[in-house]
Amino acid sequence: MGERQEPSDLVPSAVARRRGWLLTAAMVAVAAALSVAGGLADFGEDEPGVALPFGSALVLAFALFVSFGDKVWVRGDSHLSAKTVTGWRTIDLHAVKRVWRLRLPTEGQARIDRLVITDRHRVRVMVDHPDADQAVRDALRHSPIALSKGARRRLDDEELPLLVRFVGYVAKLVGMAAGLLFLWFVAYAGAEIVSRM
Image (cartoon, rainbow, N blue to C red; front, side, top):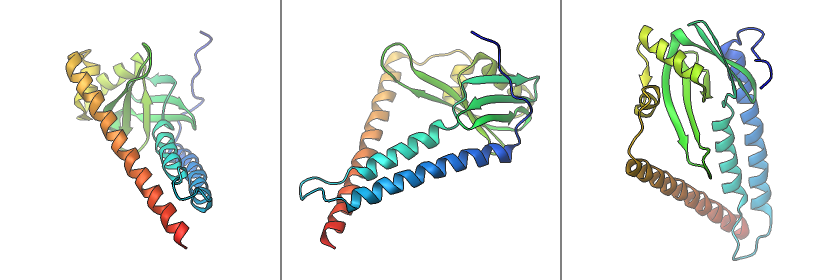
C-alpha cells in the first residue's frame, strides 16, 4: 500500500475553488475550440458536426470529476481533506452544508459510489472512503446537514431493492440519451446555419 499521504496544511477554500475553476475554464476553452473547428469544417450535407456534443459532454464530465478525491485525510472532528486532480481540498466538517450520493453503474463488479460533500465555503469533494463516511456521521451529530436519501442510505448501510435500482439506472440512461440527442440537434442546427452562410 505505501505510506499514508497527508496534506502539509489545511487548504484555504478560496484556493481550492480557484484551482477547480481554472482547470474547468481550460477545458471549456478546449471544448469551445473543438466546437468552432467542428462548425467551420465542411461535413457535407448529410453529416452534422459532432464536435459540439462531444466537447460539451467532455466539459460536463470534467467539471463533475474534477473534485474526485482518491486519498482522504481526516483531522479530528473539524476537517476532512481529499487529494483531487487539482490538489488537496479541505472541507470544514463544522460547516458541511450538503451531502449527496453519486452512483454510476460501470462494467464488471466495480462501480462509482461516492459521497459528494459541500461545505458553506463552497468547497466540494467526492470521496469513497470509510473515514469520510464516519466524518460525515460525526458531523451530523453536531449540526443539521442537507442529506440526500441516497447519502443517508449509504451512511446507514442500507441498500435499495434490486428492481428500484434497475429502474433508477434506466431512468438515468434515458435522461443521458435525451441530453445527447438534444446536443446532437443543436450541433446539427448549428452546422446547417454555418453551411448557409
